[in-house]
Length: 216
Ligand SMILES: *Cc1c(COP(=O)(O)O)cnc(C)c1O
Image (tube, rainbow, N blue to C red; front, side):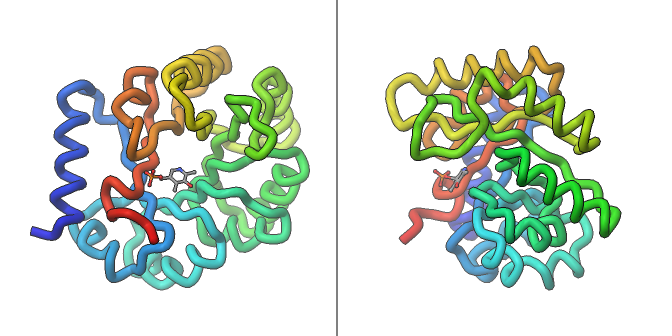
C-alpha cells in the first residue's frame, strides 16, 4: 500500500476514536507536491484537497477537476486581489477571506460566472502583525458585510493559531466566536494539532505533511 494511504488511514483511525460524527472532513493540503505524488489519495476516492497558491493550483488541478466532478478544491493561502478572478474559477472553497476589498472582488467574479463558492473568514486569532486575518472583535461586522451586503455563502471561520503553547486557548475562542455567529463549519487543525482542533468542534481539518510527508 502507498505510504500516503497508510498515513491517511492512520489519521482517519485516530479521528474515529474521538469523533463519531461523519461531518468531519479532512482537507489534504497538497501544496508543493506533484499530482503524481497526490494521485493515490485521489484514486482512493478522497475529494477534498487544498492549495495555498492560485497559480500552482491552476496548473495542478484544472485538468483533473474536469475529469472528476466531485473533487473539491480549497484555497487556504493568502489571496491577492489580482488573483481573485482565477481563484473563483478554480476553487470551490476559499478559507482566506480577510478583507472587504477581497470580498468585493470575489463576489463580483463569482457573480459574473454564476458560481457559488463556500467561504471561511480568516481570523487573526493571535493578533499577530505578520499574519493576515480579520481581528477578533471585527469579525462580527465583517461577517455581516459579506453575508448581507454581498450575499456570500460564509460557512465558517478559519484560523492559523500562533506557534506557541496556547493552541487550545485559540481553538476555544475561535470555536466560541463561530458558534456565536451560528456558523456550521469551522476550519482549524493541521498536522500537529488536528486532534485538539476536533475537541473544539472543528469540521474541516487542513492536513498536509502528516499525509504527504515533509515539504522541502
Ligand atoms: C500548509 C498549510 C496547512 C497544512 O500544514 P501541515 O502542517 O503540513 O499539516 C494547513 N493550513 C494552511 C493555511 C497551510 O498553509
